[in-house]
Length: 388
Ligand SMILES: NC(=O)c1ccc[n+]([C@@H]2O[C@H](COP(=O)([O-])OP(=O)(O)OC[C@H]3O[C@@H](n4cnc5c(N)ncnc54)[C@H](O)[C@@H]3O)[C@@H](O)[C@H]2O)c1
Image 1: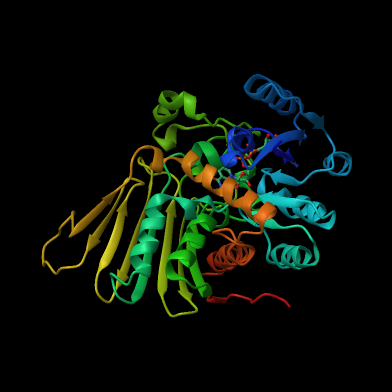
Image 2: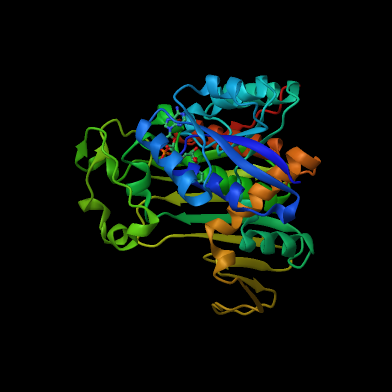
């Protein structure tokens, strides 16, 4: 008989839907995960959640409109917190204080103080916490990491990242994501994935950052009282037709986050890095370039990593070697499954996951400091170390 692991979800729809993959994953027949409960302040989303579990898995989950009551009633092994960023701290804190394992969506928290406190609370708890930095698991990042680790491009000197976000208007400027108070900044909300990947690739954490950013487009457009208009994956055609951004509507009237930003970082080991984000590009991709003393690597979308080792004084798109990834390896779902497996291996077998709490802390704190710099004319900001 397989061991049953009981989990609950806080934030049952949108990102919360990925938690279903815990139930569908076979975990190599080692154990079975059941979603026994869900909390969501939105009643409609609770109903959808219950229907989803019933249809997909013929399972019944208890629905709660009180988070703490759910934690107290359900004898949980773990809770998945997929609520908006401004609830991460309180919800993770409460679960850790009750010694319930936590899978927390990124970012760790939205203020410096919350990040420090949560780390201290985690250290006191007997429960474990893991943060959803699934970009680390992306095959193109893994391949770049392997090339760097093998020494193929020599000593790494620079990591440059450009982040083109076509769907920024739909996803981030019509609801809570648009408000500083609720997400900190988009440098934090979205960029924390990439800063974590930079730390992973550079094998070091940022110790100083500075950033620029501005509101260039969405703040000028017609706003409406809260009205979300994000098209889901199944509405792909409708979504891509929502263009150009200047014709989009329904923006959050309290919108005060930057729609483009650039951060520079120096890592503890001396590698200098940059991260640039724009939320109204026509196309959508992350482009990483890593330059070492013997060569350079660059990814093209999620589909390929090109390696440049020999000098040519002309532009060469192909370089000397190309590593390609199949359709499945390019998908978000691929990384979701890997991070889910890592989480359960961590809480059940104490196997160290690919991304740990220090990683999540330094990614969040670097972005929070970068946001302070961005709002203070690019002022240099030092990164504070862990409190003991
Ligand atoms: N790692 C990834 O790939 C990835 C992708 C998307 C989102 N996320 C993260 O997931 C989280 C949710 O993002 P989203 O876009 O799905 O947000 P969302 O606004 O769509 O909300 C998600 C769910 O949370 C519910 N909710 C709202 N307030 C809540 C509260 N106080 N407590 C519990 N649930 C609440 C909503 O009703 C909804 O069901 C964010 O922290 C985001 O950073 C991560």
